[in-house]
Image (tube, rainbow, N blue to C red; front, side):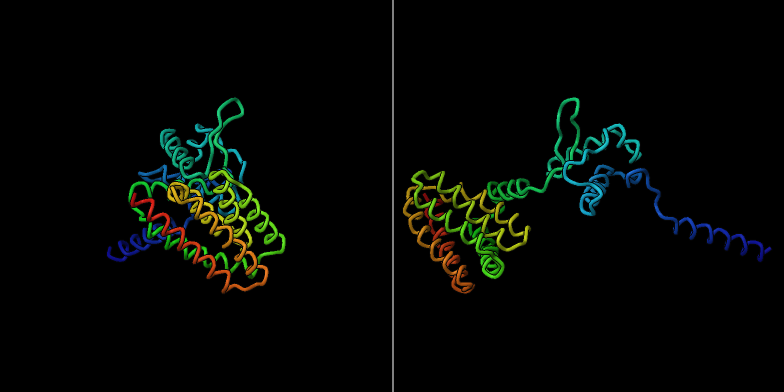
Length: 260
C-alpha cells in the first residue's frame, strides 16, 4: 500500500516537472498569449522586445485591435490600453483613415524631451541639476567628437557659427545653437548621446531667453570659434574646457533670469 502511494506520488511529481519544463506557447508572428492581471503592460513589453530584436521595424503596421486581442488572448480593452501606452511612449503612432492603424515609430527624441520638460516644469528637477547633467554629458560629447569627428563635421560646425554671427533674430540664433549641439553630438558616432543632447537642447529655450540674451550670444560666438579650432587640432582638453566655461556662463545667465 505504501509502495503504491509512493509510486503515485513519483508520477505526480514527474508530471509537474514536465509541465514546468514546457516552454510557453506562442502564436503567429511571435506574439504570446497573456496570462496576467495587468495584461496591457505585458503587451507593451512584448512589442518593445520585438522592436529591440528587429522583429518589428519602423514603419511596420501592427495587426488590427481585434486580431491583437485574439493573438494575445486578452480583451480588446486591454489591447486598446496597451496601444495608448505605446503611443504615449513614442513606440507607435496611430493614423486615421482606411489605410490607417498602429505603426511602429522611428526613433525620435520627442518623448525623452517631453519627459524632461515635464520634470522641470513640475519642479522635480532644479536648474542646478539640469546644468550639472548637461556639463557631464557635454564634456563626454566634446571629447568623443574631438577624437572621432570628421573634417566634414568640423566644417559644418564652423558654418553654423558663421550663420549664428549673421543672424539678428533671437529665435533664429537659438535654432543655430540647437543645430550646433546636434552636429557636435553626431560627431561622437554614438546615437544615444545625440538623443540626450537633442532632448536637453529642446528644454533650454524657456530658460536662456531674457534681457541679456543678445550679449550672451556675442560671447557664445567667440567661444564657438575657439571650440571648433580646438576640435580641428584634436585638442580634447582645450575643447572640453571651452565648453565647460561656456555652459557655466549659460548657467549664470539662467539663474539671473529665474531670479527676476
